[in-house]
Length: 225
Image (cartoon, rainbow, N blue to C red):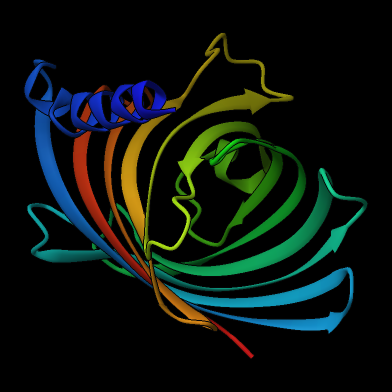
């Protein structure tokens, strides 16, 4: 078990410093988020999240959004979630416009020792209100696969993790296979029985509309009530 933890720690540092390896180091951003979670019934939860994301060396707000969703636990290892996100995003004319996004999630998880392994597939549909060309009039569909390993250390408030997520366009006539990759390393800090803080480093590589690498620090607070 100690060896496994050393491997996880090594992978976290590898991801954290991966941004310096890639040649396309172009931007830095800060992401802030707050999530309120409430258990309606034993297997049914409702989430409400507010977030702001910056770019251009964290000097400008790229977007801010409000997201609400319902999660249903099918059994010990599987869950499903449906959510809606309303986004106000900075567009090419330097003004903010709304985007509407729907998610459908299927998640599988398994604990082995102190490690929690999870895989989530997210089906995403986006509609824009900023119309620059004919393509913007159409709904955009994306499939997102996220893999995560978390070390849930007993009697210790810090739980480190690593994750990988890719974004694949769907129902598109473009030949693009993967439009975006995210490599993450972070730690969940249990503040109280009902609240936690999450600090995360993300290396994000966008392939569309042009190659762009971003180094991101994300700070999130979650409270259950």
